[in-house]
Amino acid sequence: MYCSSSPGSVPLLYNVSATKLPITADLTLDADAPMGHVTVIVSGHGAQSGGNEYMHTTDTVSVDGVVAGSFATQVDCAAFAKFSPDGNPGIFRNNKTSNPRNWCPGSLVAPRSFPVQLKPGAHEISLAIEPARMPEGSYYATSISFSAP
Image 1 (cartoon, rainbow, N blue to C red):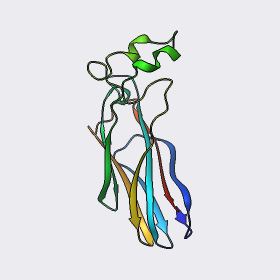
Image 2: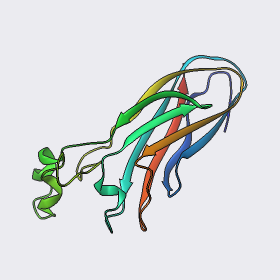
Image 3: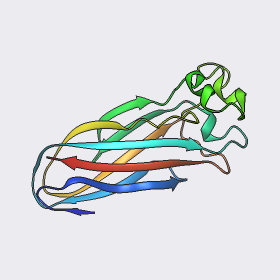
């Protein structure tokens, strides 16, 4: 992805069903971005055999091999049960213990933004996910963007 000197928000990956880790995106800038942000939205999917939908992960965002930040995906879905009265009630219980989830039906997946300072040229943005396992039928729905004033 190539950006002008004032890129605004540039999607690098948009709702990609990633099946390999780490997840990477390329960015090329033609001018300095005095202070920008890398924003990641990611959710695990795949319910078979302990799939990625049912695990808490620690996710780390790096730019050119330097860690920009990390976050945990653990969520509690109890507050969203009322929006799914005919759905699977088990999804909304014990999410911090015996029934882990990293997203909730009826809820938005939170974007995570990290400040970065980039020089002109090529850059690689990487999203590492731990534990780094990918059971059959699982994937990470991933969007990564870069924004600068």
